[in-house]
Image 1 (cartoon, rainbow, N blue to C red):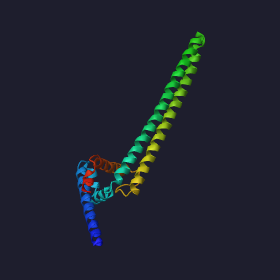
Image 2 (image 1 turned 120 degrees about the vertical axis):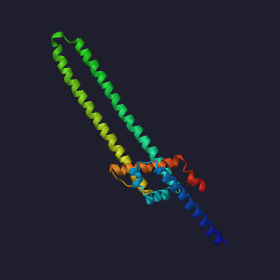
Image 3 (image 1 turned 30 degrees about the vertical axis):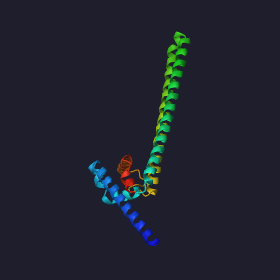
Image 4 (image 1 turned 60 degrees about the vertical axis):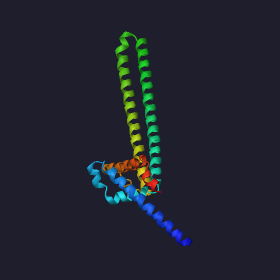
Length: 198
């Protein structure tokens, strides 16, 4: 008798899983219609079905939320680093202006043109250094964000989420962003589509 009740429970669980898969797939198909037609064409029924399967147990929603939280923290940290650099540059410019004003006030009138020429060269050198430091910071930020994207792609690929693998191809990145947006929209709807069925 126990064997039959266990088999019955498995059949009921299987039916629930199938119903949840169907609900997720149906919701995904509805959301895909909101995407540009060029991306709709790239999201086949099989891809959407595989994505719905990956979403069944809710783990992928948690992974996506965790990745989003990490991304926001990273972006905030990088933004703050850039702000600090900009503030350092602002302070440097102010100090240089102050130094130049004091030197000009203490300078004898006949030496002023020579002093101003030297100060102009110093100002140009400082501005060049500032531009280089800003460029280096921006490159660092881009590389860090690129690393985060690759980490996210790898994590989602390992989680078995359809359409995710490490790539730098702009079209594939856009497709992955659209897939993430679909997942986020389902998550915002509570994906209770599936949870209610459990």
